Amino acid sequence: GERWELLLTSLAAAAAATMAARAVTTAGHAIGSSLHGAWRGVAFWRRAVPLYIRYRLAEKAINMDPDPRRRQARWDKLHDRYAPVALKAIMKLKGFYVKVGQVMSSRNDFMPMQFIRTLSRLQDDLPALASSQVRAIIEADLRQPLEAVFSFFNFTVLGAASIGQCHSAILRATGQKVAVKVQSPHAEKLFGEDLGSARAFCRVALPEWVAILDEIERQFLTEFDYSREAANLELVESNMRKQFPRHLIHVPKPVLDLCTKNVLVMEFIPGVKLATAITQDLAYAIGSEAADKFVENFRYRLRGIDTGGEADLTNALRGPKRRRGCFDSSSLSHHDDQCIASPSEGLPEIVLPAGGCFGRCFALRRLQRARRVLRNSRSRLDRLLYVHGFQILINGAFNGDPHPGNILFEPNGALALIDYGQVKKISKVQRKQLARLVIALADHDDEAIFEHAVAMGFKTKKMDPEVIVDMAYLYFDRDGPDITGGMDARQYLEHLQSVDPVVSVADDFIMACRVSLLMRGLGSLLGREVSVAAAWKKLAYQALREP
Image 1 (spheres, rainbow, N blue to C red):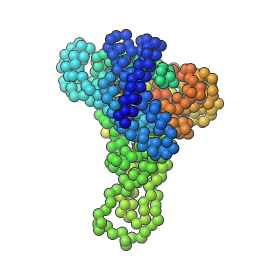
Image 2: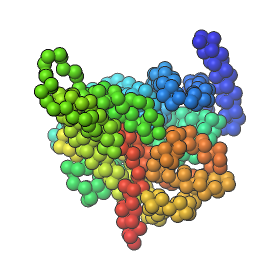
Image 3: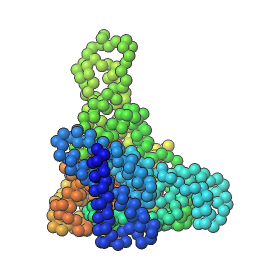
Image 4: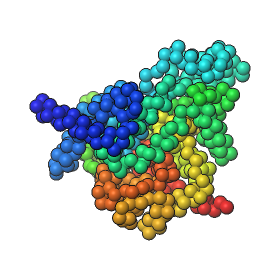
């Protein structure tokens, strides 16, 4: 084991040097022009390439194993080992890599559960700025003492993310409770350096992701001006208020007079992250261990993998065994084994043995609670899907980063949508283009999908209709095993790239694609395979009817 590890590390280090040299030759700016940028570039390559090679080699070896359960066990062992390594690297580098980790942690449908759990810390649990730094930034931007603006300021961080952190405060002038975002010094510079390194890595190792990364870079670089975010926040808040009552959808209103490049003051919204609220509710209904099993087993089913784990969830739903002598069921009539749930409900098939009267009653109570949690949660997901579809297809101004940390569940049942640093705007012509593609995807009309995808900017070397159609499904609808053949999104994109290399993607629509991916990730957390096109079909027709 140790000799193998040493050999692999040596090979990885040599490959890192070779790949870095190739990347620098083709993209001299990749590791930054400054000494600091060069250091970060080297640090990235030193961490990324060995991890990449380990997984590539493991993928070839594991996929040769004919037993799917044994394959999954081997993958789990690998993920258990390297998820903490990935988190440590991200926490060390920070910057753009935190944003990448946030996206990874939200894709429950194809990212390994070990990475989901480990990287979820990146949603709002990053190291915070010192109180003195926070005070200095606020006073420099607002040009007055902090106490002149706020009668109370809580230096304890509500959440720290990739670019800044958030605090609660009370305005001295009005007494309103507000949230105050403060941008970290040098965040913009770090992102610029990191994107160069990430792009160079993708050119060498993952060329099918380069075009996507280019559009994400253009959008990310708008995040560093909080005054622009405040204007976007006001626009989206106004759009949402016209269409949705606040007890359903709540977008915080900015205090424009107090918003600058590095400081954003807005209405404070109480609540917990939606994903946290859902998992807490499910844990209360069926127990935390069973809730984790439910999520994990559904993720595997989405990828066409049978882990045999449903028996564990069945036992959890049954509940604890009664002590001998506490309950005598001998006088009760025995029944045949009875199915009390089915996979179509989002819960696996639960079969209780004859004679287990107490166990059956206990399981039925738990199952009823679980059904209620899933029904309510899926109703919220439907609301989120509709709202984001409305923003994209009708308003043409939407949040391109609705990861789980940016969606809160309020005590009154409202869904609060926060963090509008990445608002993307698309024209009416572009909205109609996307609407036509959405309808074609929902109708499974491959000929129309190909026509509209090409019109939007999808191009491949051979213009293979099947490849372009599959790309459209993957980007804007769903990525279940019927589309990908059981591969995850990365593997399937690589497969499509090998069949017919991508020349260009629909750049203006990449952020809408990102919304689609994040909505599907949230759906997997709720045990639901999401078809974004089906959810947006009526909105697409509405967009086409507009003059």
